[in-house]
Image (cartoon, rainbow, N blue to C red; front, side, top):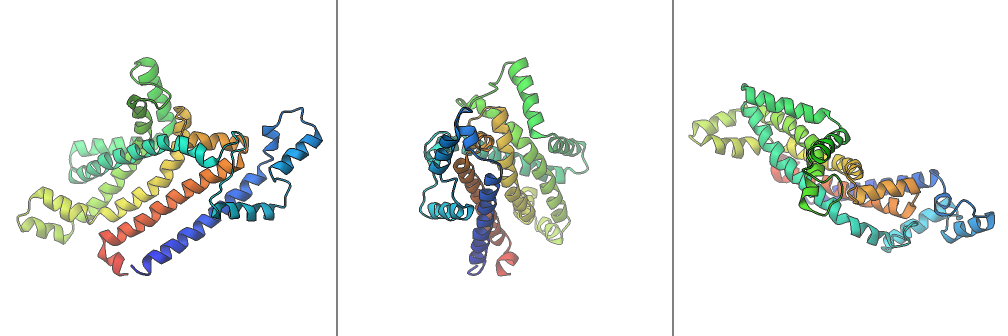
Length: 305
């Protein structure tokens, strides 16, 4: 473990550097934000003055050095559109996005893992086949299509749930269900396959022969040994969840980080976009490191290796 964590942290730092560098270069290849910030009647002299004011007239390498220097100093810049610190802009929206992601992951684990175990145990029953069919259906439907269907059904047809906003608990139901549907379906499939590999092992038959209850055998000896592929899927789902949340927040007018990033991309708001990608990439990388650490905690063979 003394060499395990330093290697993972080094990989995390290198990955983050590559991502931030690519974002810095890509944002400047998409166009000049002055064309979106200033009115159409701006003359050439005024346009040049605004470009100089924002530092966009400098050499790209100088901009890159200044960018990293500001990151090290904890200065992430001002949003070009709102003229406020990007940390303040993100702070106003981060709570809604984190709440949506937390609810989605909680629902995914609480529903996906038990259903995956049950479909493995009920593999020869009709109920297990129906659950697996529902999982394949949820895996195949795109989340934005499901979101629109839920809005048409529960908002416009039945008038049960609000279609936009994030002010009450009722606003969380459809976005959470839309995001969780895909991830529950994937987790059910992976958990089922992992449990099927475990159920036929000799130590499972030995545990039954000792007289342990079926639930103890299933959870303590079965599920624990099947957790590594399940944890892997959960780690990968975090990255997919963040990208999926961008679409869902736009559909439901969630006014979160995803909606903010979409607007910053369309308006060429460099500071907001760069900081947003930095936050998202950092979160995904940290989760992957935690998954690696979880491997070592779950399986002693990984820890010893």
